[in-house]
Image (cartoon, rainbow, N blue to C red):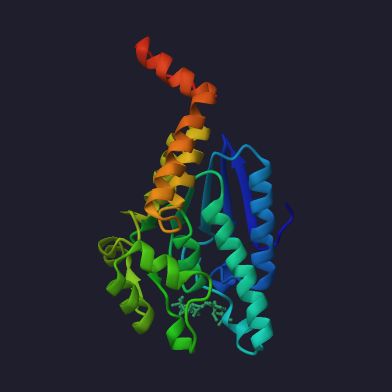
Length: 257
Ligand code: COA
């Protein structure tokens, strides 16, 4: 866990991965993406029940892919870089536990795409988000065109991608791009409370909930409903189901594994 540009913390089942390159507003160069990928291995190896992703410093969540690095890339380089970026955001999306993006500042381009891959986005009132790639002569390349259009309405997605508009936290909230806007100095506390609440929930049930919800845009409705049924029935093999229902019947608080 000796990465220069990513820091890692694991406490009380909550893992926090912080992109830590504040002199470049946490822009994701190759080294940082590789460190992020390894940090995800570490998070998966621990008993992580909630994963929080944020950026170091007071200004940026992640200001995007590294423009200085991308400037002279060939098509082949671009493909390799896109694959690495996709790998990291896909791993966030499919991470077994809920992922919370604590959007503490600028989240542009690849930074917005990292936030889009999270389950929950909590923004500081200072956050500014956008798929700004159009003004660099490119388009979102780490899942933005697909995830944005699934999260917000289609015209909002098109406007954001076509104009490269940078939207403040309030507008992002109105568009449905983030779920919550909080005072900047409250962000860590709000996210910590949310993470602690989720960490106490039955972990297998949460995992199943995430897996089922992740299929909404992947499966046909009939297949998704079948999938939900199988996940639901499988949970009756867990101690948490026994405990949750027994606690209800005995009129006490459940004590999940
Ligand atoms: N890639 C590489 N370097 C970046 C970067 C990025 N995405 N975003 C910021 N930086 C660097 C700047 O070049 C600058 O480096 P320098 O100190 O060597 O000049 C440093 O981070 C600080 O950024 P700066 O632009 O001076 O800060 P600012 O407060 O004036 O502006 C932003 C902040 C985020 C508005 C501005 O940096 C910006 O627009 N960044 C690009 C955002 C973007 O389009 N991202 C999508 C990429 S796909």
